[in-house]
Image (tube, rainbow, N blue to C red; front, top):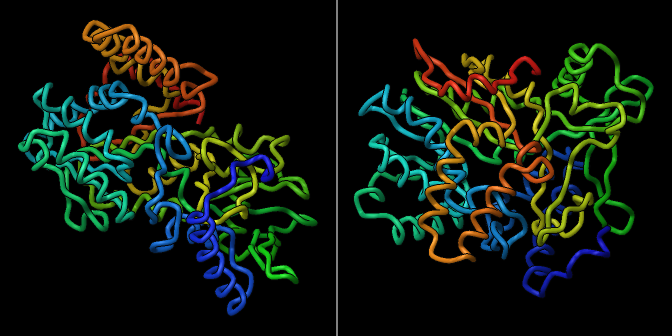
Length: 397
């Protein structure tokens, strides 16, 4: 697969080599590192990780396209879905977006909130990448009226004080450093990254610690059977702690996660013997996470049953779970499309709008592969649209 990928340029090679040297030094001094730690370095190492460096990541000129990059209708629908909560909470309501990408979502969402009269008091963006933060800052300052832009603030860490409002995360959970596990003679092993005799990265397995082994045994109990020897997949034992960390101070409001993934019984199908881990490079998906470290986005699909469990353990209840297409349609996608289509200036613009809807909703595109999960806490009534409640598939979890 790697041989069919585009060749990186000299600057990219140099960048990857620098991260490779860092990884080699760490492995040489400490021994093989868990794959989750390798993935964390590849994505977030200061100045060297995929999300920490200055390479274009999103859109047609990057490595992949997210829903907000397709146009404004995705953000319009999300705003439609959550603005009843903002209206109910009133002037003290805030919005917290995890991982703001290019700022496209924030731009479109703030315009939608303003038009609906439900502007949050503050629009926070929790963005660990200094490079992306500056891109977001520049985009929003140039695109938004001064009054809207003044509501935006960036955070280095989740809010420490109690707050009320909406937490939103699009394609965030899939980028959490994942643990890879396998089974040997019924025992749980954790995948590590080591060095071979010539200093090249290689994957190897070591007996899992109690946390990883316990997480895998929990999966087996919930699925009603043991994994077969040689079965390999991913698990996020840290997910409950992560949800508590990012949302523990949200005393009243909702969380909305949109990502690609499955309910647990579909995630761990017996025939899916090598998990869901993928690398993305210049719109090519491949399965070699050791190829050009630092230049690839590394992701794994989301176990939405695990996400529901993590939200429950943090004190939230699942308010709705449904495929992205149904979520968007129940949140006004048809009306948003008709309005944008009527306002489009030419046939090319109208064609782009039609293509945007297609990519957002068709089963083979984002419509079925992506799922939406809404959590609520501290609300006597969760004001969700009747169409959303009617489309809820929480029973599948």
